[in-house]
Amino acid sequence: MLDNSLVMIAIIFTVNIVYVSFFTLRMIFTLKGQRYFAAFISMFEIVIYIVGLGLVLDNLDRIENVIAYAVGYGTGVIVGMKIEEKLALGYTTVNVISSDPDIEFTRMLRDKGYGVTSWYAYGMEGDRLAMQILTPRKYELKLYETIRYIDPKAFIVAYEPKQIHGGFWVKQVKRGKIRNAQQENKQEDKQEAF
Image (cartoon, rainbow, N blue to C red):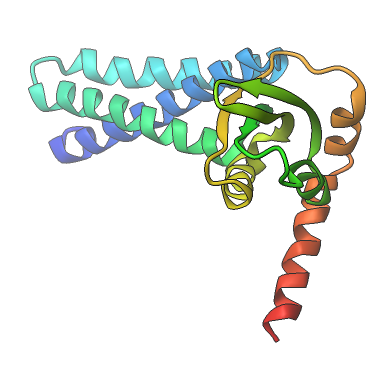
């Protein structure tokens, strides 16, 4: 079976996609502080790496194997990133500055289940409402949509916090308050549609 060049190319390509996807996930789990899960994944990652590299090194006289290895590596990066997007591990802190401090921004976000800390600020063109919001990464895009709906001119900066401890945010996020509020909003939208 390995004597067939198309089969060899397909195997090398597939092995490298799997290897690089595992590599990406291991790095993500390492950065998130989940060392045991990262170590577990690394055992499979290294076995796949040795097999794939061995196939290429045993057949270096065939340029198509090297190309399959390189293309599989690049494709594995994309696949690994897609898997990471779907897992959406961790939290995002979103800082928002609203151009209109009179909007009931904080209440509207809290009604949707987000923990919001807000304060009045003064910008170059006058009063502003500044907010800090914590959200699980899987709800990050929905939060941006909500913010843009409330205030299309809002200034948004987001980052991933390294560590979170205490406060309203952690309790409410862990209890699934955001998910529950979004489910309630979906049910209300369905009822309004009828």
